[in-house]
Length: 416
Image (cartoon, rainbow, N blue to C red; front, side, top):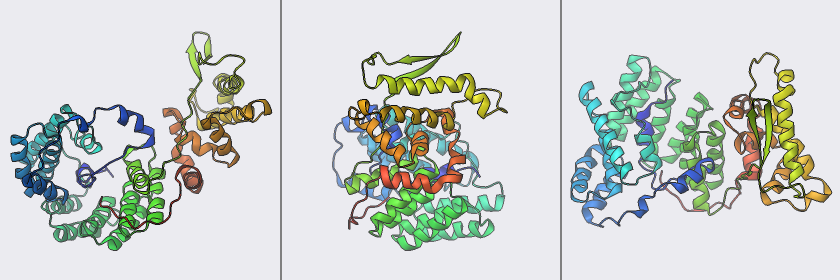
């Protein structure tokens, strides 16, 4: 089933601060910041407009934000909120052509915000609107799609009770609709009924355990109930479901910020690369490495084993594959040989923190999760789905024991 873009925007509008996944943190840090803009005027009109917007009453917020954008054209936050509100308003329009034009306008406003320096995750979602304003259906069944779109219109107006009725109708028509169950939970969450919200988010994870959103929302509901440890578990579940999706990490990153802990994310700085030449694959070592460096032999061992895979081992292990691919099996084999070299007495006491952590990860039996999550390229990532199917608990234990520190339960609550 297609992941309906509509709620992809709506659910992000209540994120006041969003932290990117560790996998993408460097890009986020390097991007231009909205904070570089002049401070916007703190007026009652601006506060009221943003309160209306964050409450999800997009139709009501839209003209307020449009007036503020005209008065303060350099206010990036207002421009972004206006774009999202126009998009929300589009869901209330019954005429397809008028609705399409409203979506085009929403995207245009999002582009303007981007040019003004906005690099928020919400804006990136907005920019995924097709330039022609075309829509993705919630379902290939017209009755389900109609019920969902009607409910979305009520949601955009801020009528959570009526929206929930529409989502329930869609869920009864199609009990396997992920979006219908998810959005029912979201209406409860907006009304601060977090227990009921959590029940629906739990049901949604059963419909499809390999999509991240319901875990993340479930974590939000648990956090609002003061259950920090339980929220941590669900935020980890979101990453396990879709680790290469930037959105999956937002809940876990926010949880870490609020609990004032740092994720123990091991970033292994590659000092050996395999390059293709006319005569076959060749090892290229980092210029900083020299033969007397204690790390020289471990990195050479890693690269040498990968060369073996390209020359012979891949064909032996995957006889039915016509073309070589960097696999999880190869990466773990090479890393394990490297760990063996790192464990030698003349090297063990000279490791940098990332290599020392790698040795501990191997000793705990988590080299596969590390390879898939911390050291994967596009080829290795292809093996994630099958590994997750067979070893979901191992992935959770890796996060639980190595990546995400445990913290005492805290009383602070937040809103998504």
